[in-house]
Amino acid sequence: MTGQAERLREILAAENTRQPDKNKIITFSSGKGGTGKTFISVNIAHVLAYEGYKVLFVDFDSNLSNADILLNLTPKKTIVDYFTGRSLFRNTITKGDGNVDYVFGDSGRVEYPRVTIDMIARFINDTKTASEEYDFVVIDTGAGLNNEILHLLSKSFLNVFVTTPEPTAIMDTYAVLKLLKTKSVNPENYVLVNMCDSENQAIEAYSNLNTALSHFLKSSSTLLGYVSYDALVRKSIIDQNLFFKTYPKSELTYQLRSISTKLAGSRHLANINQG
Image (cartoon, rainbow, N blue to C red; front, side, top):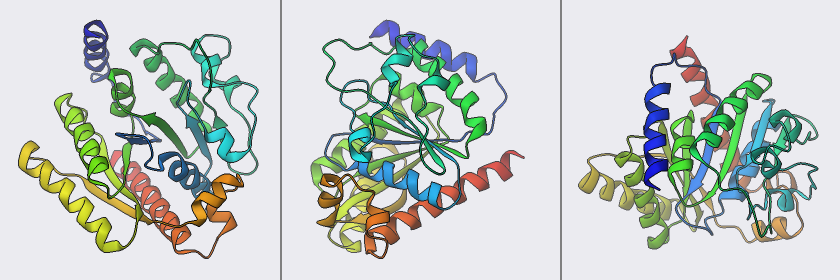
């Protein structure tokens, strides 16, 4: 672990000397499982595609992925084939219908690659090369955090941390943001509160998180939005249907589209500033 941390510092130091480029990577992360992160990231990616943007969705999980199941798709290549050198990145992409393509994760392997800092650096470079064909690259990182994921987050345009109103989920999100600050990882960090009973509940959860950040870390986060609890989410997952397409007039779909609009607006603003 110490060697990986030192390697991370070396790579970050080297890359900090490079000219900034037009970053298209948006990551979705969480401090724990069960926050609905994959459901959110998959639907957001497809809402962006529905709005006319070309999107590459990446399931970054090497052994507990489920985006392919959620979408009822069977990939010929997965991210494990890429990390083990059996496939080039461009050959790992599964072409989808319309404006969204995929790099899927893998599941159920007894042996799967231990992803290193150098592998992450190669992945980022290959992703940025492939992103010339896309408006957005949406990455579902899997739950938890380590030095390798930290490096990925440090190279994103913005990071979305999906949490819920549960106190344990809020504290896990705080722990993740604390670690990012400790490691000086400073892209745009947003919080999305999922499975809320009301707007007031979302605001209270976000307020509790920001109070802890302000008091202990002298920092803050930005609220991207919230998503209501809806029993139809479970049905859409069981039926392997995209929620926003199956229930286009629901409040939850409105919230997903509002969040996607904010993300697209942030991306355009960043391009103007870089120009």
